[in-house]
Image 1 (cartoon, rainbow, N blue to C red):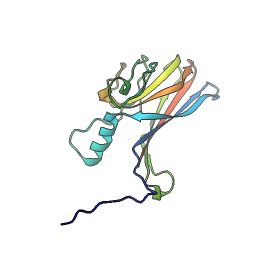
Image 2: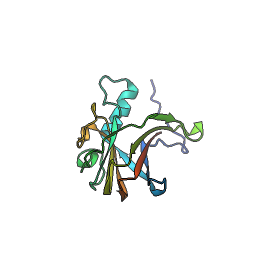
Image 3: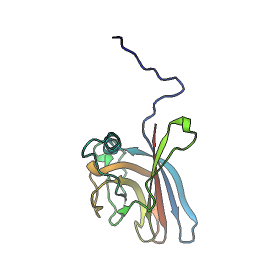
Image 4: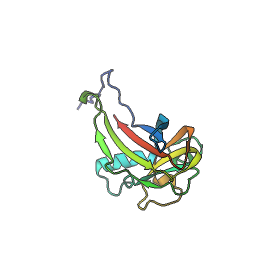
Length: 180
């Protein structure tokens, strides 16, 4: 029996899962006050959820249940303190927006990319703060008004520059995970 080595064509490299967040802050009149696209880090637990759910392993991490905001600025990390919400802002736990998650194949089918999208909305009066600096996607079985441990944090992003969300503003975070 001979060993065969699989070689990928040079134009098609395997890419890791990539996370992108689109942040949009609008005032009560619909005026855009902040708009930015940021990279987010999918944590070890987030990667475990994708892999174990895709392969049908028994008892994988829970599905996405919501998003939360905070004011911490610790660097993002796959594990440890940077893999969880550092400074939770009370009352900012929100469920996934209606109609999400969504799955699509952006661009040409030959790219082999799959995109999973979640959206979270913090309406007027929710998450009012002059220095929102972090956001996370969590998988708590019951979405709580408390910080979330790294074991239940699937992705984290630092909002830079920080967001000044007034009491009449609405913040929408759209998270895209691009696979392949």
